[in-house]
Length: 407
Image (cartoon, rainbow, N blue to C red; front, side, top):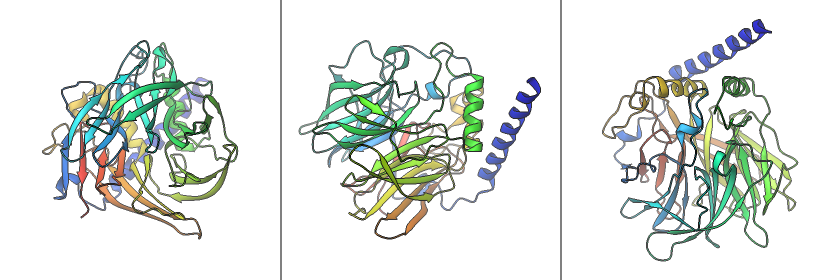
């Protein structure tokens, strides 16, 4: 038994090493975003030590967008490190015209529940904002239902309710997408981790090995969850995956698109009234993906254009997360917006995928950014502002984001 475990570990480590080599030998199609004259660097240091690490974004109106605030210490904790109790990380609003950032409080939010946001989705007609929240010891895994008021001044958030379910794995949810808000709140959420974070000891060696093996050998452990109000279930008609990440929808909410990390593909489904799914098509990107965002300016009734954030190599990321604890944050990522050279870069890539649904065309164009000397730009966030047509790029590793105008 012991020898089998050692052999399995060696195979996993070899796979990670080979995956990492692909990162080094893959030529970047473009220069860093910091070298582009049409891009601004926006620091996320807003005199709030809890609001620095952006993971997802929604566009409220012409003047405001809201970012989630990822707790990277939770997902990349040392082996056996206990999960910190009661932590509140503010959602952050950016004023588009001035680029100023504002931490947001939630009126009426339960005092005994932690708030560690991840995926977001927003319905402009009703002002409903859904937030994946890793509350864990102080509230468990949940989806928060908030209302956004944005008619005057900085957006205000009001707590409406929380959705919890036995289907939600502790620390495992990733992104969320709204299908409808009336008469029932209907939404899908993705599961990223195939094992739960252990409340007492945090991430464990076994958990990490299962995670690595699932990516390298494409083990189908995770799936989508469909909820109608507080009733959640696993919908029929979907492909299971090693890991699911971002999710978005078509303009008319009849289709959803999911970032399937195991297949390194965007998988598209049509949505049935009962929440079950029908497979439509798949677009292969050949690299791990994070968030998906519908490009509202280019999409039509029969064509969906999504921007996809991602990285070259999962193995490279796993190696760098070890450096996060060994060498300290300053050495694993660049904190200097004027030009950093981190010891352990994670090249990132942002792609545009066009899917035509009245024919078989699927176009994948990795045209936006690849950074070989930094972890920044396009990993977690690559989204087009539908009001200004500017592209927003960011990574939860970084403490700054890029705003780029059309070239």
